[in-house]
Image (cartoon, rainbow, N blue to C red; front, top):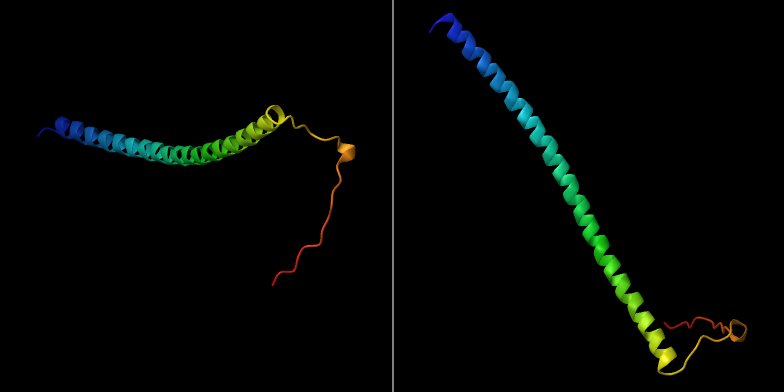
Length: 93
């Protein structure tokens, strides 16, 4: 091999090595970002499930209130007529 060919291959090898390091670094950064986003996605799915449960609970209360008002003619009493009765907690062994 001539001196020029050797220099060419050494430079090509060095550039390939630097490119490999750069690609690996970008891969690790993107992998970390992906893991972070997967964690966020999972947290949002849990939150979504909680919100759906809460919506179901609120819808059930609203439905009961609507039925009580329309079917049975019930209404909220005047706050001045509400009497609270406090009792002592029972001491069951």
